[in-house]
Length: 88
Image (cartoon, rainbow, N blue to C red; front, side):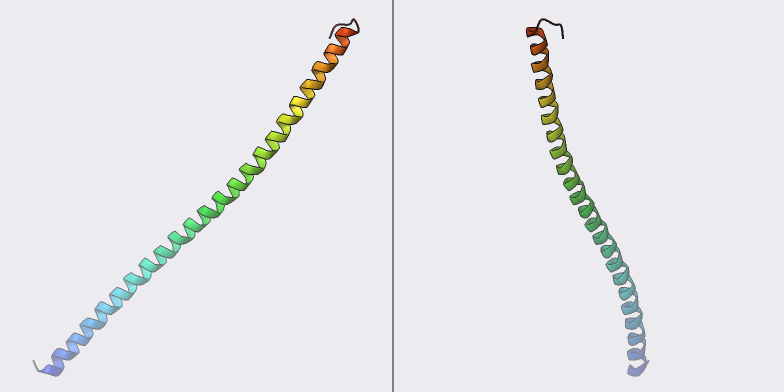
């Protein structure tokens, strides 16, 4: 084999290896992008859930305060009925 043939075979093998590496790299990059999108989506959903949880906790606190006020009013009215000679 002369040098030109060896060089040509080397170039063909190098091109095949480079093509295989490019295909593998493309698949790995695509997989990494999909994984990154999944993580970003998960983080976004987590943030939304935390916001909703914060809103629900605030609403629950308001409802508890309203319930406590209603119970206090009910107790006051029962006491008033009892003081006036009735039965609650």
